[in-house]
Each structure stands twice: as C-alpha cells, then as structure tokens.
Image (cartoon, rainbow, N blue to C red; front, side, top):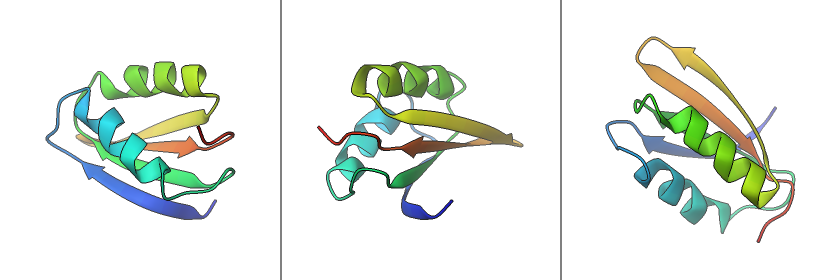
Length: 77
C-alpha cells in the first residue's frame, strides 16, 4: 500500500485529526491512501464513523502510544 499523504495529528484531540484528514483529502485522488498518526484514543472510532459516512475504507494499527490510521479514499467528495 502506497501512502499518498501523511497527517501528523499526534497530540490533537478529536475532531481535529478528522478535520486535518479532510484537508489532506482535497489534494488526493480516489483510491489514494492517507496515513494519519494520532494519540487520541477515541480517534479510531471517529475515523470509522467518518469513513462510513464518506464512503472510504479505514484500518488502524496501534504502535505504542501512537495509532496509525490508514484511510483509503473510495470517493472524493
């Protein structure tokens, strides 16, 4: 999986990571994957909801205190 864009949202509380990701989406194409680094424990659930509402796919992997969320754009709105 090639990462088209990375967003460093460590230390930010939701909804900031989602808003930062939305800004990054505007520079990406359908099918691109964005990686968002977060420390907010509620972020994976927030991104799951965001992805479902926007038609994207999401996965995440916890790496110590940082969670790497991968958002694959199925449809850019």
